[in-house]
Length: 419
Ligand code: HAM
Image: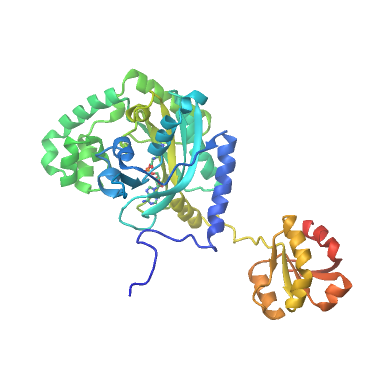
């Protein structure tokens, strides 16, 4: 019989590791609040059409990686592979534009892509991200990039670099793609099979090919997209760069950064973890001025990013940025027997009501075993409760970290715990 285990490419987040996630989540909330962004939560599954239209038929995500299924009513549904299309759908469905002309949104949640699992690549993974919806201006692009960088700075991460590019407006890009096709025409037969297909479909994806032969051809023969931007596109990109300079953010302009999703216009960016292996993209994003109208919503410019949480954890572990799991046990109650447990129950109840973290023994262990467990849990204070303590109304509280003991009445425990 097959053992019941997690599905390939999915992972349990274990209770002894959850503090890493919670550390990150609490920093995210603070950073997003400092930029006055609001959280949005959308369902984990949506109509397949949303992603095929939104992310694009030619993208790897839609053509190869989606978990799609038919429900009992015959509708094709998909576990969300990314969140930008879902947020755009929500924006359109609930007429966000009537509430305000600008929405600064953030999200955090699981995503699903059927990719080959490896370090830093799962089939269920988690992203946090930002979507700034409503502004066509470069200050919104710079703000999105700023937020992405703020998170890494606040977490103390050192080994990362920001890459930026502009892939122009749709019109400029069409012209550039023809120029690119012409430049590569004589070398088409030397390209790998995938690139030959992409040559006709989405030729920009040739920049993403890992095949050394294709990379060599691109290096030698592909003109830079930055030389084919319209004046407006170029001004937009220049202003983004000036705003990043003003914020003191270092960046590398990389004209080959085209991104694998079809909805981008103008600015694209990625943050790479320089100490990570093959899966080094910590964060990716860009402007997508046509997505909302392509999904039948009003013409609405937008820019955003999403970042992988598992990759961030790997990067933080590599830089030893996590503290050890700090105990959240304020008081460990070690009753000598069930009668003593019963006797101390009203006190425990009262302390918990006041918000203290109190552990009460549930295993009827010996005092010695309870002391060992209190140590393992890193409890701040321990109180052994026997008949004598209950009768006298006085407890001996032992501070496990400082190795001191303090006597207190049952009513005064609270004062010691707050110190
Ligand atoms: P993406 O580049 O597909 O963009 O994903 C963003 C980030 O999610 C990646 O940089 C990586 O850290 C993480 N990630 C992606 N796939 C996996 C995986 N299989 N396992 C682990 N981590 C992964 C988007 O999703 C766009 N929606 C970003 C965006 C938001 N653009 C505008 N707004």
